[in-house]
Amino acid sequence: MKRIVFLAGILLIHLSSFAQDGAHGFPVIGEPCPDFTLENIQNYHTDRVSLSDLKGKYVVLDFWHRHCSACIASFPEMDQLARKFKGQVEFFMVGLQDKKGLEGFYKELQKRYSLSIPSGIDSALFRRFVPGGSAPHILLIDKEGIVKAITAPVDEAMIRSFIADKPFDFYDISYLGNIKWRRGYTDDYERMILKEAGQLADYKIRYRSVFLDYVMNEMPKVSRYGSIDRFVGSKKQFLEEAGDLNYFYILAHFGVTAWTNRDPEYLEFYRVPIFEGKDKSEFEPDYNRWANIFWYRLYLPQERMKNKAFIMKTMQEDLTRAFGYKATVEMRDMPYWKVTATKETLEKLRTKGPVPKALRGDSADVYRFRDVPFEQALRYVFGNIYGSNYPEPVINETGFNGNIDLDFRDIFRTDFDTVRKELQRHGIVLTKEERPFKVLVIRDAK
Picture: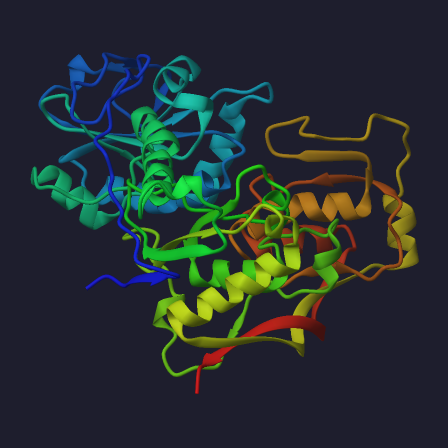
């Protein structure tokens, strides 16, 4: 049975029906897929294919672009699925062309991951089918041409149900699904909570909060990067978040859930909590099955919403009541990557400038840093890795933060060891060390 924890009173939740107001030409789940022709296909028996050519076949379209680290990280798995279901499902990667030219970029991807999945670079189709250009964005189209899912990610179990014409759970990221998230659930909940107990909106809310198990496709989007500051002083008198328990505990105790080397939290807080209880399973979310994900809303008087410390304290107390763990912030020696370089290396890297302070990719396989601060270059080359929640910070201890010129050959930046080796090629050395951080320690309540 799913956990439902109500704090400060009983809450009745009602989700009203969602009236579709049109998809503006984007594919709609449960309806025939708009006709399309995919151009410039590689690894396929023809360089172009239309929806009519694929009639009677199951089809998966995986839309991606250069800046989607999650897309790139998923390529090996998608390639494996394409191999496993060859002859049963037609898989196609659909790339968005950019000024740097995606062809060379994809060739490097093919080489690194030994990809054989059919792929086409077709910006027109990408823009027709992907609202807002957000990726990854995956369409599953059945043999009758009906859109069965618009989602990300997909896995083997989902594909097996898809080709067996059986229902399966998926995270709806369609155009209409996004409208439902933005308008339907939040607005309905707002109306219900304020009208409960006889026009509650006529009264001043002193305190009300709720934690629920996350219901896929009905509740607001899951947060990955949160901050209490964005709620402080808000005209609305509530805070609303969806995420896993690690996310909520970090937000409640640190006030922010993600930081980079330009933020003061980087040298102070450790990004991964320590769990010292008996059963860690509740802190292990499954984003394929949407298990161990939760939704939280906190109502306070507007004057209290101006007080960040009060909001955080209230969240901490709500977490204790809802889940029963004890959390403390403690100083611990934790691992990190120490960045060093010789004076000769730093002088060699020092910029020959001047050129605009920008990160430029002047070829398909090299990022050319010109007149860029050293810290900014480190943040950029590790950006995709940190986006995947790589836990250990990389700290510049060279004493240098001047501007540098650097030709960086790892354009994907999704593998730590590859990035580390590429930096070492330029004389920038990373070694594993320990230093004190404030770390969140979570224990079973006694």
